[in-house]
Amino acid sequence: MAAAGRLDGSIAWRALSEQSNSTPEDAIPVLDHGFVRLDGVMADDLSVANAARVSFARRKAELDEADEGLIRFLMRDRHGCYDDATDVLTDKGWVPWPKVTGNERFATLSHGGSLEYQPALRMVHKERKGSMIGFKGMSIDLLVTPDHRVLASGMTTLPLRKNPVYKLLPAYMVLWQSHRHATTAAWTGPEPLTLTFGRRQVPTKPMLRLLGFFIGDGNFPVDHSENHITFHLRKAREIAFLERVGPEAGFEVKRWKHAFAISIEPDLRPVFASCYQNREKVIPRDLLSLGPDSLTALYEGLLESDGSRHIWPNKADEETYSTTSRELADQIQELALKLGRSASLRPHDPKPGDGHYGYKQRWRLTIYNARNSRPELCRTEADRDNQMGIERYNGTIHCVEVPSGTLYVRRNGYPVFCGNTPFEHNAFRYHVRCPIFVAREWFRHRIGSFNEFSLRYARATEDFYVPEADDVRSQVGKPGAYSFEPVDTELAERTREELRTLYDQAYATYERLVAAGVARELARSVLPVGAYTQFYWTVNARALMNFVSLRNAEFAQREIRRYAEAVESFFAERMPVTHAAFLANGRIAP
Image 1 (cartoon, rainbow, N blue to C red):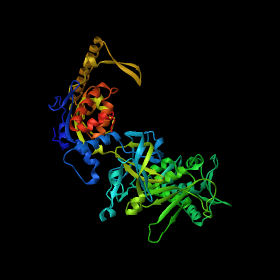
Image 2: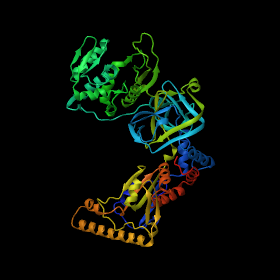
Image 3: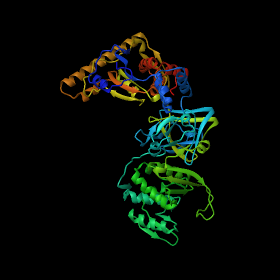
Image 4: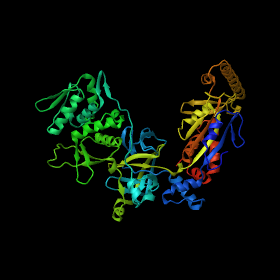
């Protein structure tokens, strides 16, 4: 076994070059030909305590009672969470936490600084009565549990003020400390030269500029039966923009008595119709998946309609956008993120003479460039008193866990990236030999990293899973509500014998095909899922607890449960305090 504290990838690659049917001495035997062994480890209880206290710049060499108490607290409280008034950005747009189902894909910041949408590994909705930490600055608003990790960079030195280094730190560790937050990311998406609508093909950027301008200032009859879109414009700037981008997109702009019009054929009607939702303007959802160059064109059209630019002497320029459509306002905030910027969203009361009419609630977005999208807190003594504090809270708190550990959230219209748990700063590497059907169930969890023995390059062994007579069982009840019952001795033995016969036939066929010159990658297709495979699995403690909570459980399939039991025994041996806290808190992963 690799030495504790070391994970050497070369060991795994050499071991998987040929599949052996022997059980290593340091492994736990499982089923008839399988095993689980701990091949390498960089994990102990102290790694959890040190990770939780990282911002103190202290690293202990030995675990003490205070550390054990901290681990029990982290396990008991399980996960830092947000209050009811916070929204989270998903692939469906902004969703208030109380309405999150867990089926969405969540906007997250990759380790390389890119915006990605990832599925939830776990969802948290629970009641809380106690203290919360509040963050409130010019463009940030958060209310989180004290243990919740925020993505922040200190500002105590000149290098950090100029070039922030963001880390995930518990909220209580940045309380009243000078720091800044991250609100931007890099986005990549398709950049087509043309867009096709039915039989009509149009250049991408001019068309997106026209669509953005239409969303702000255009009109299309509610029944979408007309063959033209219209614009009622008064400003010379807006008229000049329409008369430029219309022809660039391939359309003729006609001047009517009180309006401007563009004729559209039937293939284009659905495009402009999709800019409406419940009689309110919106950006068609599929357009937001385009790359930043294309989205810049869309943004230019929006800004030329209901937007404005403010140029301030000796200050960064500012852009704003106003709309009565709340959905559109939400989408523009998402659009700003995909352009490498950030935007705050606030209700905006009309003022006499500002050029806006009507009774509808208006929303105003302030769009910041990347340099001004790093909100600062607690820079001075006065700021500390006004911008952070401890609040009493009595209500529901919420969160989801995603692979990268960060989420894009907003409160009162101010967006920011935040994160989650300290149980991920450690690693186990397991060497597993199991039937293929067990491995496929294992891989479905999508947690950790897997490296599997390949039947494309190495010869299959003659080992196949034949259950013990006591493990042959029948299924009783309907799918989703069934139980397993033992079968009589005669049926159990007949099942075992039929499996052996089938395995012998399958392996003999495999051998004949390989001997005849058929490639192993094709010959392997005759082997059943009862054949044994091997893989290496690297996983952190939090993900490991999630796995064993599901697979070392009464409802799990018997075969994979036995592997989960072996996996958990190594975990309990290496991290006894963490494992004990895991058991004490109902076997729920933090």
